Amino acid sequence: GREIRLAARPSGWPTAETFDLVEVDVPDPGPGQVLVRNLFTSVDPYMRGRMDDRESYVPPFRVGAPLDGGAVGEVVASGSDDVPEGSLVLHGLGWRDFALADAGAFRVVDAHAAPSPSAHLGVLGMPGLTAYVGLLDVAGFREGDAVFVSGAAGAVGSLVGQIAKLRGAGRVVGSAGSAEKVAHLVDDLGFDAAFDYKDGPVREQLRAAAPDGIDVYFDNVGGEHLEAAISALHRFGRVALCGAVAQYNDTEPPAAPRNLAAAIGKELTLRGFIVGSHGDRMPAFVEEVGGWLRAGRITVRETVVDGLENAPDAFLGMLRGQNTGKMVVRL
Ligand code: NDP
Image (cartoon, rainbow, N blue to C red; front, top):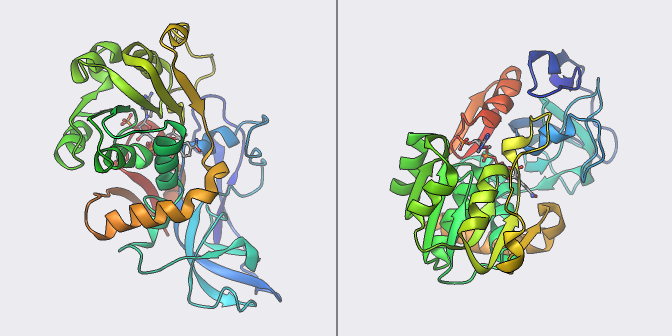
């Protein structure tokens, strides 16, 4: 089997020199251990932060050690009755062909929950739960709210907009980085309006897309987007601070938002969150979003890159916006 290691910590954008593809032996599982052949491995924005050597809510990757992160695979050998051979499992030992660990590291998931096992890395997994708790719990979404979401064509954002619509939003506006994505948001995902943030100042484009203002902003991007949202939010507006993907590769602090003080007079709530703190909402999420998925009321797009050797390119491509919906690597 093969694994991808962190060869060196990047400064700014990662490059080919950041990653090392290495051939490794695949050992037999010992008592209580499970061997999994990975089918899909996830590339996620938060992994960029883990390449830096600094304190965060997840420990940094170690130089010379394999990268890790979400993956789904099939159990090929098992020393545990809890995780039998042949089952589909979700776990955190991605970026490698085979995962070997104690049975407790693997969670058996429903192989029939979605057409592709990759759904457990996207709509039915961590990004889906992020959209659900971020919108409903963190931003305190209420029926009739006008919602703006950035990164709207991505894994999290595409679900935020659709969940808002299904829960009775007044108006749902999204931003994304290409004309194709903007068309996808309006034509396929049911957004009321969308714009390409590369076409001009976000503040002006948001004002045109939501002339009556917004109640909720779901922030995947930070910077200029957050600044524009602060100016468009109504009194008592709410912001879920989910991510700041616009600045993950920056070496200088961001120039925006410059209007944070407007949050005082407008009595805004800006609340950051980490999906890992909301695991208790998994059952409600699976029930509601899983139900919409089965009923065909949610549209899911994925961008699939083939081959572990292409995982670094998939990761970089995702940070550059080459994905629509969840970016996954098929092994
Ligand atoms: P996406 O599928 O949305 O992929 C990342 C997207 O970021 C790209 O497709 C690209 O789309 C967009 N992007 C890249 N650079 C910029 C830029 N300069 N300005 C605006 N958009 C940019 O990733 P996820 O759905 O997995 O994650 C979305 C956000 O949610 C990230 O910020 C991530 O860190 C955060 N997150 C937070 C979690 C939490 O617990 N708080 C959990 C999971 C995700 P485009 O073509 O539109 O530019």
